[in-house]
Image (cartoon, rainbow, N blue to C red; front, side, top):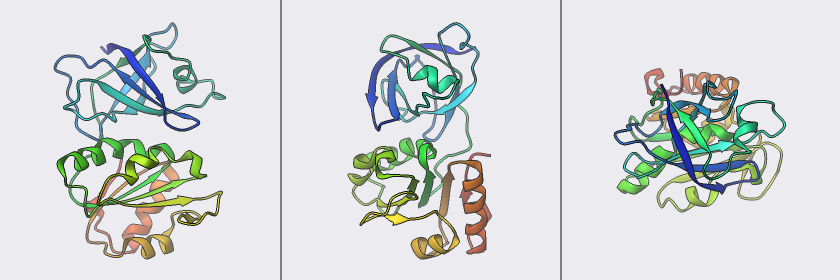
Amino acid sequence: MGHTLAITKIDDITHNVRQFTFEKPEGFEFTPGQAAEVGIDKQGWRDADNPFTFTALPEWDDLQFTIKIYPDHDGLTEQIGKMRVGDSFIVGDAWGTIEYKGRGTFIAGGAGVTPFIAILRMLAARGEISGHRLIFANKREADIILKEEFAAMDGLEVIHVLSEEKKNGFEHGRIDKPMLERLIGNTEQHFYVCGPDGMVESINDALKELGADPDGLVFEE
């Protein structure tokens, strides 16, 4: 049975991404990178079971989701886009296979960055972010989630890849084997991969071909 949790704050992160801060039940536990099945306290949507990743840290007093809104889709995220402070999520217990296992490179496509937000925040809070890399693919610069926050993480190498814009300071195209070979160098590290299924599959295949240890690939199975 899920927890009914009221929203206390909503922030616009990009033109189509919102950050929802909401109540944390006493004793609720999760680890950075984990998600929960989510519905909303509204007729017809209480039993929805879309997974969303927690972007808060476990020690925070509140919980948080960072969600891409699809207003043209007739689905849960379209409904979430209509939510206001005081409305409630229905949140199940935490689960997920993306967890921090050691220093390495995070590779994300669009909203696929959300499992990495809490992990990177955790590392930054501990003073352990140095030596990690984030390769973040989006269509346009305006689509980049938490661009300034990632840039402010001293020691984190951030590489943005844009598929529909060519701009100075950004990689252009799609993350493929030649780009990975050029950007990552040493494959003796952990690789954390999250994004659309086809992207995750192709990147994992490319990393293995480049010599990455399959046991060092961390992704949602």
